[in-house]
Length: 311
Image (cartoon, rainbow, N blue to C red; front, side):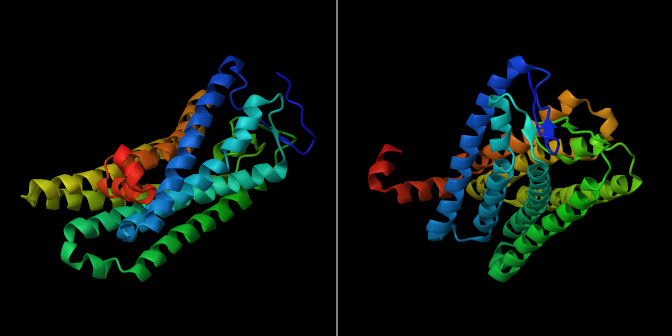
């Protein structure tokens, strides 16, 4: 398959080694993208329009949905263009922007998931003081910190990675401009980038994940003491949804970013990247809403009595 591009363009190899799969992958990706758009937009609108959902949990959840919307939109449209067309190119500027936004939003999501774990800890373990602990100003500061943390990490990694000499290399061995693939394009070894990437991996992956696991360790102890079956079930539902999202997102990210890059094959890397960039953002709204009566009730009320009767 032809891969024409101008001298300044990068070539996204993507799945070009298996052209027979490209159309199937494009259809699957398109379906997941539509589900991501509809699901996450619904959560944002419902959280905003339904006053009963004006709580810290749904404030964090709507921010998570917004991150997922932006994250997939920074990747999927260009990916579909490349899968459907003869060219696999992306401009240098487009590649730099895609790289920056993917890093920024990915790091922000890592921190948001940790913030949401703290919220669940406060709700389960400190129910009488919950509204005092999770007051609106604190929630806004926590979310702002997550966004600024993601922005800071993206600026550092992007500036270092894009300065690496490529010696004319233009082929990006992935379906979008992601850090591991761009580092592999460099014709020199950079110890500085390796240390920075590992350090940021610890800060944005291992530390938040450790805090999440500690939160759930304390939550588990508290849940074991709950004698009311209804409350026990409610706690498991809300915490179970968050823990499922954490497992899917962190599991694949840690495998990709904390493992030495030379031990990951291109096919393996593409599969895991496909999972945390496209599959997980589409599953998040489903995981949170399918087991959540509050969201279902809010959707019914917003749609009106006629739709509610059908639902």
